[in-house]
Length: 221
Image 1 (cartoon, rainbow, N blue to C red):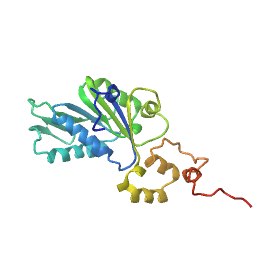
Image 2: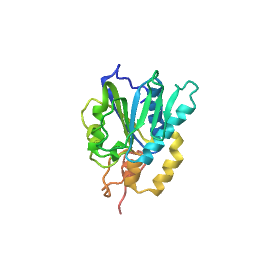
Image 3: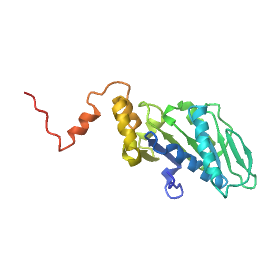
Image 4: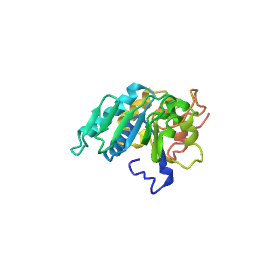
């Protein structure tokens, strides 16, 4: 995500990141937001709830507080960070409603997009400047909605996946969750699969064993 560049690849204008739990999604999102802010850009940030937006904003402030070259700040609240007009950088946390209109941004960041109402999400898109970028980050939800439709379509966008099971530092927690979660929840939270709410005909464990050459065939007597 940090290496996306619309100047090099047109599909980087819109980036979809499908992420497992605790895979670094919020930290990456905060890094992107602060990096754009530090070079004088305006960033709009949204999430399904105020708590989630506030938590994401806190990540951004951590980057700000650790930056010895942070631009001079003229306004800082729980939902807004604004640099001196000579610099121009600004970050605004906006509620995820279809009433969020009237602003213009270089970067739009939507966290947990799969859990946002489509009308509310799409209301943000016209705020993007012609040269701007849109980042949609989420853990999977049901097989519906703008994120799912775009992820599974042939649209020219950048798709990035970060599964928890592929991250070595998460191994112990992933195995704990595998033993304690329902299979459907585990597949959604850690395997980044869009699954329904029912019980699958074939379990993930069965499919894994079926592709393992070290597991012998089932013998019935």
